[in-house]
Length: 289
Ligand code: ADP
Image (tube, rainbow, N blue to C red; front, side, top):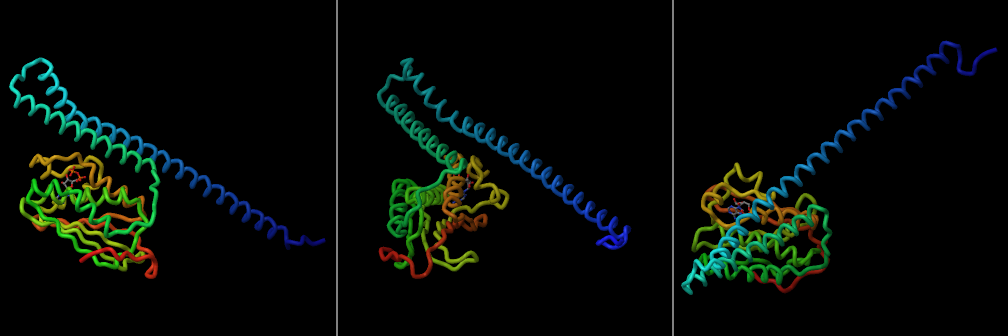
């Protein structure tokens, strides 16, 4: 009688080999599960830390305007301020700090929405009117700083899929920063073009300023929530460090990104990258150059 697998030694060797392979497979599976558990635990820990940092950052930022409002209110309530001009000054202070506070709350809610995976309502948006409106919205800031905004965009800019309000807000944040950080009397340029990038065609919206530029040490951090550059803090320029993190969140929710090119003393250029439709898709004829 002969075993179909050959001699007894061959059959045993084959069975041993198979068992060995199965054991290795199980070990591999176990190792993969352990690394998955470790990765998940680290992720949960990182998210927990981010949440704590976020809450700490929010509380810290809300404290300053709140204490200004409280002390102005106390002085008024105690009748310490009698003269009408002083009362008006306190009124303006409370109004401005109140506005700052409500804008900050809006930004924080927006950021929290983005971080918890908020989905934007993406529709076809004509870029030229949107860029013009965004430029118009910062007019009140321009007079204060004697700054000019120059717009350049070709008439054949394609329409993009975007949430118009969120995209406009992102452009406004960049324009507001460019105006805020540039020296008085300088020019801020808003431009847009369609270019072929590695990942396909994209629309590139650029906000360039002639300001002080951003030190290399700050560059890796400026898109983090609540991060403020040393120069901004030293020069006591108003802000809460949320503007750029919102721009980044909005762009990523649109399948795009934001990048920056800046050298100290040489100004800064922030670029918004948005996926563009294929060459023959809808075109926008309302732009100007
Ligand atoms: P904020 O302006 O309120 O500080 P942002 O998130 O908008 O917060 O910007 C983060 C930091 O990036 C700023 O504190 C500043 O240091 C730097 N920054 C942003 N835009 C510019 C700019 N156009 N020129 C120089 N520095 C800038």
